[in-house]
Amino acid sequence: MSNLSPSEVTNEDLIFLNRAIEIGEAASEENLPIGAVVVLDGAIVAEGSNSCMYPTFNPNGHAEINALKGVDAKLLYENSRKMTLYSNIEPCVMCLGTIIIFRIGRVVYGTNDPYRGACFVNNHLDKIYRKDQLPTFVGPVPQVQEKCIAMWESANKKYRAFRKEL
Picture 1 (cartoon, one colour):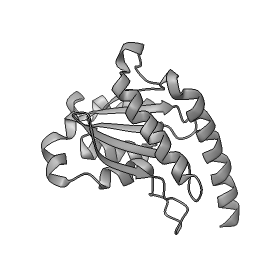
Picture 2 (spheres, rainbow, N blue to C red):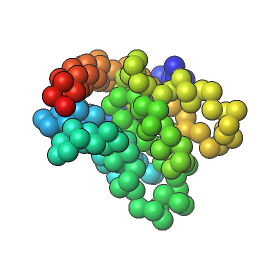
Picture 3 (cartoon, one colour):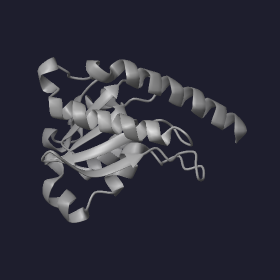
Picture 4 (cartoon, rainbow, N blue to C red):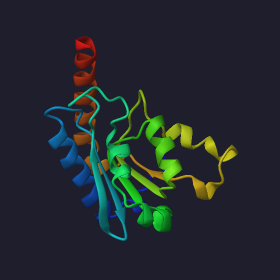
């Protein structure tokens, strides 16, 4: 599903991935436990958490999209391919589309999403997009995968219960 080799995950990656995990944990009280961080040159430029369920039902309130909306337009225009997006859970197809449109260069994620994850789609887009238009995916990251799997399981359980309430 991804092209992960241990040498691709740096200490800096772990710091920012752990920040995405913290954001997801903070969101978990009212929303799904998913967090995202956008980084440029070793500095966080935007963060986002899941907002699909509260305050109102918002199916596109994914952490990755919320984080990308927070990136300054000029900074994004000039540096998007140098940016890395970190998410505790593999981005979905909708988020992948947004990542491609924003031209983010790299995505690092904690664990796979076997139901909705989009990494496999990315591997087939080279027939539509040039390679320099697609992000490089790194994940799942073994150092945080167990914690991220638990968050993924929690998200699925919580969302199924939420859907029953609709």
